[in-house]
Image (tube, rainbow, N blue to C red; front, side):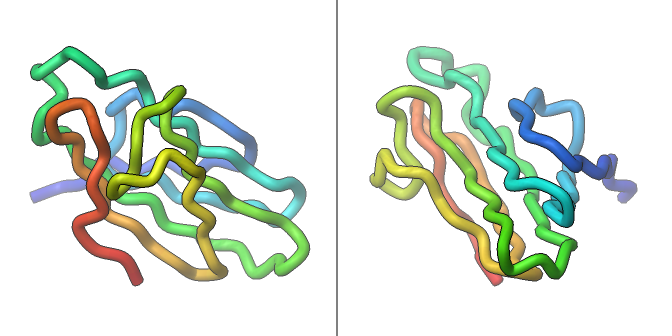
Length: 101
C-alpha cells in the first residue's frame, strides 16, 4: 500500500488530498485546520496522519478543529510536540485520535 505524502511549511486546511501531512515549523508556527465535517456522514472513516518533522522549540504546531467541532471531545486546538505524530479519523461529525506518539 502506498501513502500519499506532502510537506507543509505554513498553515493550511486539510483537504483529504494526502494520507500523511509532514509539518515543518522551522521558520514559522503552523496551524493545521480541520475541515467542517458536521452533518456529513460521507466523511465517516476519513483518516490521515500528521507528523511534525522540525526541531524548532520556539515555534508551535496546532491542529485546530472547525468552529465548535471536537478532537476527542475537546473543542480546543491540539498542540503537537517536537517529532510528534497523530493519526486522526472522522466519525459522526467529530475527530478522534486513533494513535499519538
